[in-house]
Image (tube, rainbow, N blue to C red):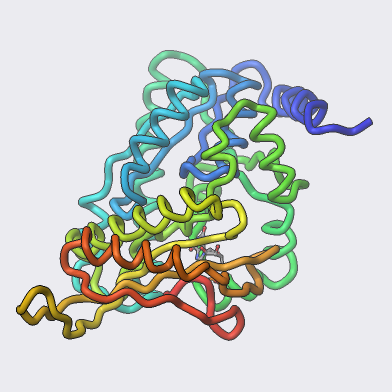
Length: 328
Ligand code: XMP
């Protein structure tokens, strides 16, 4: 009978026969469950001939880059290179406020950084006389496959989703997609079988452009810091309340408006945090999550007290459609 455990064994065999005894494989990891499970299977199949690349784009969540590094390298023994490109991304985002421009800049810069890192790995591999990089690992799931076959999906036409398609042409790599027949819940089950931390297995999806599309208006280091801090508090309180797995996706967005407030006997004039939490099966449609008032109250108090530059918190009660999950 077909189980997730036999899936892993079969997939490892399949990968070994495709890749052969000497070829090398590269792939981007993000800290999400899909890319981590895909990387784990690949590294079980071919060990150090798989090279994972994490691009630090400067707009990941608080401490995320370190956590991903720790999990992949130490716990899962995956051969990982981190491209520290935060300053490059933030430099290119300077002065940009248009959401589509932000997405394009991040998508293009991602490919640029990933290719440069891949070229470094290729040079090292070649110098060591260890064969060539011939394959690109992608954590594509079944719904992604369907979306790109049908009509690129509503999301893809409404917002530019970034991918590493350019690499296939430039480096002439062949794609391997171990998860292309699976749904998200199956990937999570695989993650548990593969001994990946629960924390990572159950992590909410996080968009490639990261916090840059959750800081509305210009993305500066200080704005990113505010959004990160508020988001961290929001998620921490959701986890404490035992609601993290009930919610499909939650985050804090920083709005580019200021409002008047009062602290002691002084007037304040500071920014607004919008909290977004949704429930959804497929992310194509979504309902806003009915967050209990006492939890909202605790979160709002903490954000206003702890995050400098914010004096007001609002909760987003819009469903998709007509709103989207992300604000940009
Ligand atoms: P929207 O905002 O279109 O988002 O309702 C639907 C889902 O897709 C995620 N999302 C992205 N994921 N790259 C990604 O990998 C992207 O550019 C991107 N944009 C949105 C979003 O977080 C939600 O889960």
